Length: 487
Image (cartoon, rainbow, N blue to C red; front, side, top):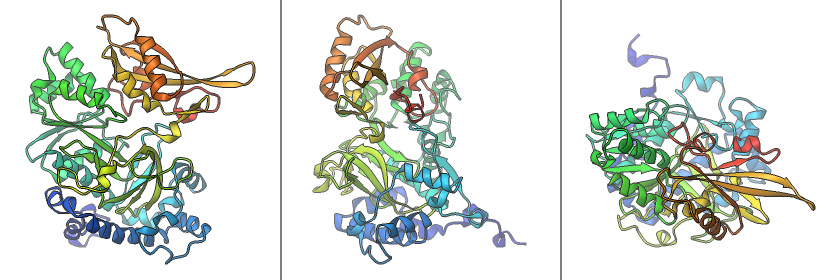
């Protein structure tokens, strides 16, 4: 039998690559075309792709039932202007679907024949709010998630011949895989997949970087800070000696730009913010202007809705992100409420960025609405502590919020303790606890207790110091909440 007639689900034969490149232009072509489309052309493309995913949704039992339960029938959704007629869903709905029909649920819309005929890859959520949730990716999704990262890297200045080091392990988590594929498959950038600090010790990470000429990095801020410390203390060099071109990272709610400035000063290079999930790849990315993260408009449609009502918020207001992904069929992603808090930058809705793109721009990721804690009637988001903690150079920038419940004379009361690491070489802790409590009270709108702890002591509790996965900012010790916070 000739290889071209194989009946196996050969991956490289799973896509029509010529058509794929026309539909989703490669990074250099994208930067000169789709990225610079006028708003009306972007909207027309989104409308076309939205109607295609809605058509696919009617063939999926998860969506078909939810839509019919809302009184919808095929044909009711005629354009993207009708998107709000479709009910949103969240990870709890996915979990219920999986529990009813394990291990993938009606949400995925797959059966045995799918696995026998389509090359599939399983990736999971980070598991920061419970058991990691598995999501399948067919070749279209797997390639496009990597392509979105490649586009961002290209816009930021990555070019063939660069060397990208990725101190994140290629496991069931999505980010390191997509960064590796972006560099290797789409950009001609050599990817050094060194894994996390547990897989490759921090000192060795740096030795590899110096030896092989790493000039680009993708990692979390906490580990980038750790690498700089190890370079200075153990190798007796400065990371600036690496002559890094730029770093892609995940700044979170760095509203005052403190974290970005610290990293930029430490590494001597631009720091670009990124936002994405394992269902949609890179959804938001900084251009070289660093004036907000551009939404990847031709691969997804992003809405911002009120946390309580689910209704659209006014331009510039904070709310939950609801995403519809255009390139996903297994599973379709249609009005998925990520419960990640963000806002669109108002000026990006009316005028282009200085880089020339009309893609809308989102502000920093502000935390998760389902990680919110209500203290004395005030909604508190643990990620909102970052500006206060970064405001004093005596802290390491690491913290974790520990929530507990106390039984008072009248009723039970929830309390939050914010544990903050202090640098070993801090000259003094005088006044630090009081100033942190004052600033946090101003930022959060409610009083919280501050406990100062030694540098490195939160590594286990907060999952920092080069450990696998994201840092944990909430440990919920209230009865019945442990599973949610992973405590």
